[in-house]
Image (cartoon, rainbow, N blue to C red; front, top):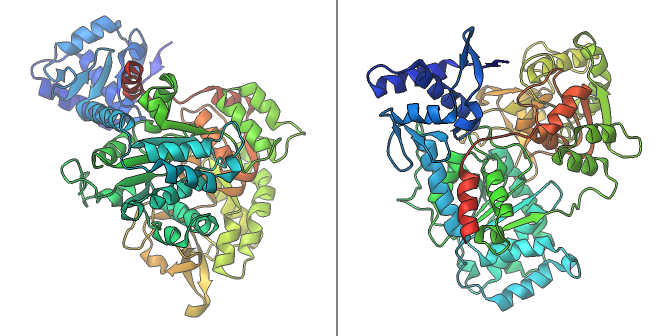
Length: 585
């Protein structure tokens, strides 16, 4: 059966450009391979694996094209002047394992692998082990006597090595571990001289990390001067590197390195290959890098699955290898108690057990989970009404903007898709109609009281970032005029004139991708009625783990089970590059 190749305009244009650069007459097959490579990168892959497409029958523009075997594809590519071997500066690169790259993505991958391995192989300097051990015993007393004191192990690795990768799901203590790592660093003899940066891929994640650190600092068993010395500023990676307006370049790079001794990166699973490469390249040779994230979550929207590749390579290496010694997995969950439905189905989803997960979802013995068979399109709004009113009535009755923001974040509807009746756009429209029919909102314009807002771009002048959520609410200090209210760094709220808002959209429903870094008491996750490439194990896991208390999944059984069994595959050579070097160590 032929595989439909949905060629984009940019794929066609790029393939035509490469063919022109190749000179002379190029075959239709070469043009197709270049277009397939462009399409692969657009879907988040770093390269095109020839073994995956060799021998396949593709359907393009109503015609069926049978691709030859790998050897024939390699022979064709190597005959083209635009193709080079690894290290050669040509538009296309083909490695010995049959992976076809755009040159810049091969270079990103090559540079990142080298820098990660260098960091993993290097011990941090000037660590007083006696001071460290005393600090570990004081700051991690809850680990004493436990067989798997992973948080304490992570802290020790973070101080002793230039690279520490801490992976764990929600509730495993990543943030509480990192705040203790900060204390341990500052308690060292020269600790107060440490220049420490904390960064995240999004502004929303930065604000959440900052708030969490400020909440945890007063509870630490350490001197007050250490608490005062702790950095409290968290910025996006783009801001840390000094993004140059109107270009993809940064102020800080290999030639102008960041001045920090330690860089801590949260939500690392969301970082694409180009940005991670730029960040690691900009570090001083002596700088310490600490990566925090959940390797099982959705990867970055852009190309690559960097954290997952690093963790996989570390797991495959011997225990004594540098990369394996730099990786710590936090497994004990401090949020969900034994028997928690969310914890149980999260584990089943990660294991790819479709039917078993479905059975758990329908179980009456687990708390905090519920299953709803996806309604037909004609019935969707009627069935949705009860859920919407239960979830959103409370915040719309709030008497202050702060109260409305707090109540709104208790509940959220998450979607896999943006378009269609089961996607963000369709559901937001349905929800607004339901709320208006009940008299809870009045849609005289897009600027109505209680409208939830989701910022979709970064705006540094307004200190609003992609993923921030706010609410339109009357401002008593302005005679009841509608203002856009957002959480403030000090725990209060700040107001902005609606006309000054950056690009934004309604946020009753949001994509699972946009929800990364957020948590809600209750989550309803709506999947589409048919299979989709984006509905995968990682998406379902990420949606489930946004919930702190309960999650309800709306889906068809078949779509759900197939999605749980379907693991996201992002082709790259990063894991192999790290594994080969790790096994040699």
